[in-house]
Length: 98
Image (cartoon, rainbow, N blue to C red):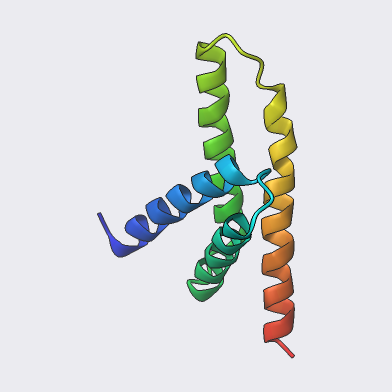
């Protein structure tokens, strides 16, 4: 596995933890998001890759919920996670170009 693939897999694991804990409003969740955004920024990961990570994870969770016989409607709320991540990242890019 290449360094880029390792990074991508680590980011997917990090994002999974962000999703799982996103609606738990605590300092650890905010720190996890900040660390993720810093990694993405440092590695100059393209926005479509972040969206790919999000969509892959949501797809996995949807399949899991269907196997369990549960509705995946709740996953729509996790669009907020993606919006939050992208907004913070855009702010970092904006501030870096001053």
